[in-house]
Length: 380
Image 1 (cartoon, rainbow, N blue to C red):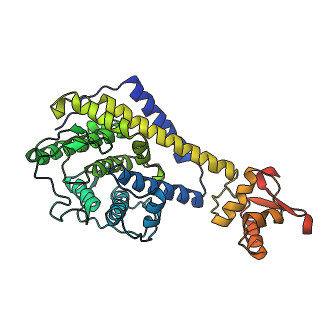
Image 2: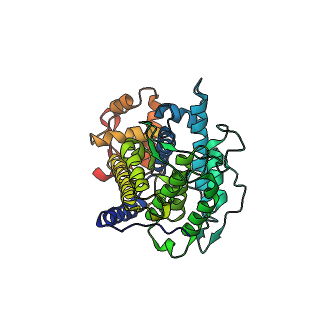
Image 3: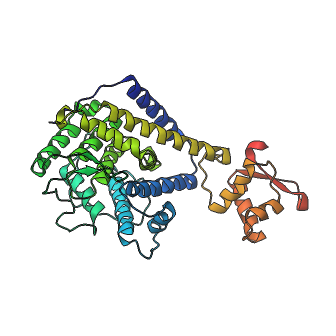
């Protein structure tokens, strides 16, 4: 069994403590379903866009969003296929890590069939070789020869920094790959190893898969995706609202640098000190969750009261969201101002939305006829 070498440094402990505090606050934060779905969609787009961008995908975030939402782009067939594939990988992870009887985190129209039995033991997902191979197969579908999609490489490879072209490290020989994968799986399924924090274990799995480079293509995406499987399965999914890929892309030199630093400290994979990489990964997680918390706070400022008079979460539509956005800057919304906010809507439509917000207990109408205005219930 693989036994990673690392030190639990004060810096790592600090990031882990921050992550756990953020996790608690995010999971307890009351978010209106419409807003939660919006944040979830944002995270999905960022995860897919930046997850493929790291590997050289040329499409912009806006173009990636269009593809995810079902549009077709002319040209860039390979880039488009990468987006579609990673979109399916994310859904595969979601379905894979959803405990029996629980509701999936993502509401999507894509479907990825799981061709093998997903095993849970004492509410713990059992990680398998088939999972890793399936992630790579979906990642590389229609991008490589079918015989290489989800199958281990048969040749020696080197890993290069896509930004600079320099050799990052030289993975083990192809004949070692199946044995090394088995070692990794023994480790991540080990009861003693499971006592480690999930973020630490996800980071270890991420590095290990990058270091051995088991497939012909899609190794980086496969490594990041399998690390996400561990996070999601072990309670660090944050309702599917976060994405680490953007941080990795925005800090690409540091990302590659952390991988290189670990790989260069010893020729033997089993003897490499992973401490610096674990710190980098935990820092990325803490930064992303901090960003997510700030996004949730922005929403809380936008809609100070998100519960109706019965204490129930209230769902609002996009037009109502625009109307409520006014109260971030003013406390009295008049019909003339509402028209400016929704210029394409008729007065009858605007009135219906305002009346619905009244019924939901979010706003109250003051005055009559031309002098009437609306206020947040909080400001009564």
